[in-house]
Length: 200
Image 1 (cartoon, one colour):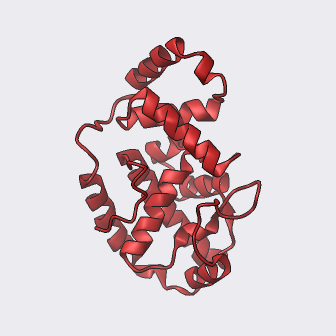
Image 2 (image 1 turned 180 degrees about the horizontal axis):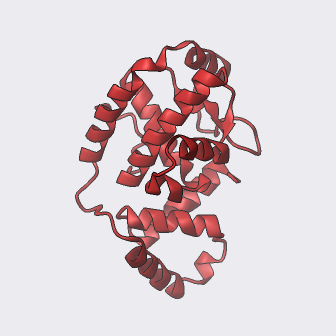
């Protein structure tokens, strides 16, 4: 498996599970819409339509899309595929995030022209390899203990948490459920908001 994932972001099992569904949604987008760009919220909606009973995907929110797109980029790079993540765009700028590297128009054309019929087998293998690289210390938790852990942190850091909206809180809880501590989860959401801006 390739180490093309941004080293600053430790992918969790949640990022991998949702990221794999995002790959499938982007393949659908490339195949059935001629590669039309799709905003993050609509991308999650499309993934849910393709996988209506996926509870992990059901909890995903646009503010957490960054790590999932890193998974998509790493998967595409590891298999020498065109970068599917180029189709996912910010709803404010209507472009990929600033960190996006590459020729956006050329990448979209390559994504549309590619035959994605073989992607599922490679995706299953890649996701399995990625899960094996998640540190053992990142043990998934149930929602209730994660919520209690976040509330305890929030109560002792109210001033630093004033900016948090409902979607931000949901992603923080998702990250805690994936094994991260509350402080790391909070910082990761702050970083995502700085990089991706308003994702709703």
